[in-house]
Length: 139
Ligand code: CMP
Image (cartoon, rainbow, N blue to C red):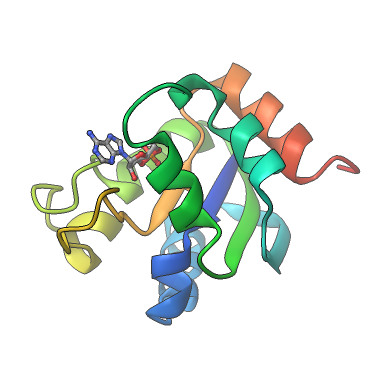
């Protein structure tokens, strides 16, 4: 049965005009985009989205970064889409993410307080349900 995951093109990805490239890779892999919106997000949504990182040293830099410009949020659907998008995205650190992945091909470390890594993808079915509820409450 189809599975849904929340994908974000973070402000660095939008600013670098990589939204189309990210969506192209998702569609080329065979997943469906069932919701898509560009928006500027507030601290309250981000605090909920990143609740697991509250208290960590990079929490505030992360929230500030995510409010630094528009974000593109998408709900991506397909069998094993959660794992599949994480595989497309590559590992967290773009410096060492594998070539062939979004982060490995397109990202790097810019020396900022928070690692800017272009995209977010839900990490489990529980996270996906929670995050889709936050970002797309009417879905
Ligand atoms: P992501 O895994 O999508 O969500 C949490 C984000 O916090 C992560 O991407 C990075 O952008 C950032 N991050 C995680 N760990 C660190 C760290 N040790 N130092 C700076 N930023 C981090």
